[in-house]
Image (cartoon, rainbow, N blue to C red; front, top):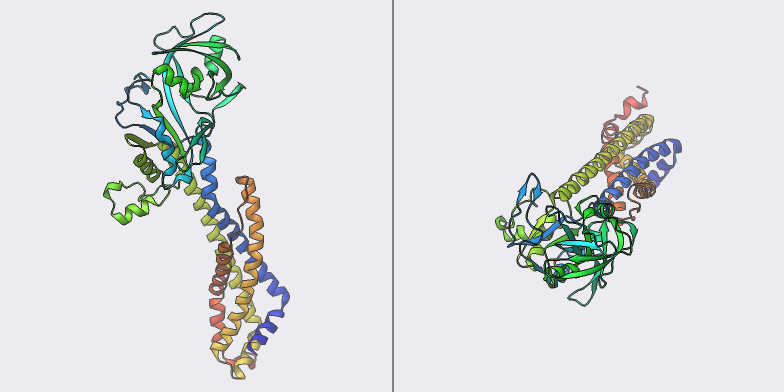
Length: 434
C-alpha cells in the first residue's frame, strides 16, 4: 500500500516533478563532468607536462662542485667523475618503474672541428671551444627481465627538433649540428666533419640541423658512443636526464626520509612523489646524486593544484545550486499538498508516516535525476576532455555510485526543512481552511 501511494503521488503533477528532476539532473551533470575530469586530470596533465622535459637529473656523487660566476659554469665539460652506462637498465626495476617515461645519458666532450671541403677550423677561439654532446635519440635498452625499453633525448627533451634532415643512427658515424653552429660555419647536410677530441680524432657525416633554443644550438650532437671514443671513456656518461610521471608534492613529500618512521617511509615510498622516485633511483644507481629539477616539478604541482581546486569549487557550487532548487521545489510541493497532508493526519497517519512518504517521493526523484545527470555529465566530460586534453575520460562505476549518492544527499538536505514543516501540520486548522 505504501509503495502504491508513493508511485501514485510521484506520477501526479508531472510538470512539477519534471522541473525538479531537471534542476537536479543539471546539477548532477556538472558534478559528474567536474569529478570525471578531476579524477583524470592528474594523469592527463602529467603526460602533458612531460613536454616540459626531464624532471630529474642524475650526476656522479663524487663529482666536483660546479664553478659558476655570474650564472656561467667555467668548469671544463669533461671534468669530474663518470658513471657506468651498464647500470642504466636498473632504473626500470624500481617500484615506480611504470612511471619512468624516458631517460637519456649525456657525455659532453670539448673538440675542434672543421669541414673536409674547406679545411677551415670551425672553432679556433680558445674561450669558446666546440662541443660534441653524446646522447641517445631512439635507443633500445635491454632490461633485466628480458624485455626492452625504447628511450632517448627525443622523449626527455621533446623541444629538440630538426629544421632539416634526420636524426643520426646510434651505430653510425653521424651527427646533427646546432642551428647557430650551421649558420656561423656554413655546414651543409652531407658534409663530412673532422672532429679532433682530447684522445682521438674521428669523422662524422652531418645528417640534420638541430634547434633547441639552448646551448645545444651551438654544438654538435652525436651518438654517445662517439663521445665516449673522443674522451677515451668507453661505456661511461656524465649526466642523465630522466622524465617521470609524478604527483604534486605536499609537506609530507618534502620531508627527509631519514626523519621518517618505518610506516611513514613505506607510505612515502609508495606514493609517486618526484622525491620518492628520485630516492628509489638512487638506491639502484650507486654513487649517484639524483636531483629534482624544481622548475619543472614545482610548476607541475602548482598548475595541477589550481586546476583541481577550480574543479572542486565548480562541484561545490553545482551541489549548492541543486540543493537550493530541490529545497524550493519541495517547499512549493508541501504548500500545494497542505490539504492532502491534513487529511492523511485526520485519518490516523502519524507525523513520521507523512514525513517518510514525502521523503520516499523525493528519494525516487533523486535516483531518477541522479541517473539522468550522470548520463548528461558523461557527455559533458567527454567534450571537456577532448577540448582540453585531446582524450575523453572513461566512464566510471565509482563516479556513477558517487553521483547517485550525492543526488540522494542533496535531495534530503534540500527537502529537510519543508518535510519537517509538513510533519508539524495540524489537521484541524487545515481542514477548516485556516
